[in-house]
Image (cartoon, rainbow, N blue to C red; front, side):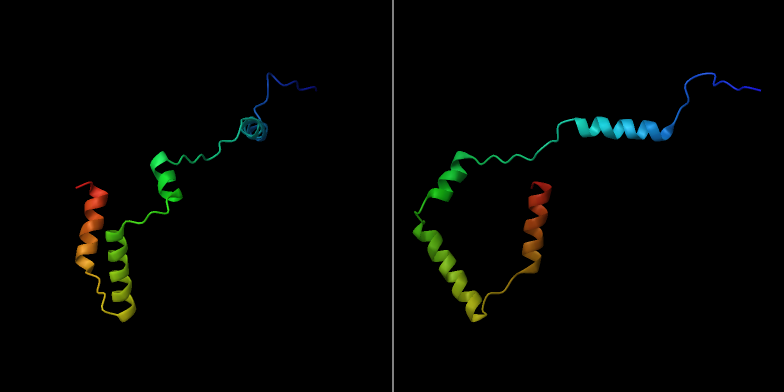
Length: 86
């Protein structure tokens, strides 16, 4: 007795191989980074605002002396406001 297939056989393995081959044939997406003109200017600028430098120096001295204390509640509130856009 001879048995002939009645139609195309659905092979799940072949479907997977074909799907993977088509994914590999598609061009790979790459990450792209764009830096604004203002950010580039800031990176290339050697000019430091004297008021900002004074604040940085004051904070550095407080941290080095151990007098700088962090208010956890205020920090948490700032994070919350930032993430909830308030």
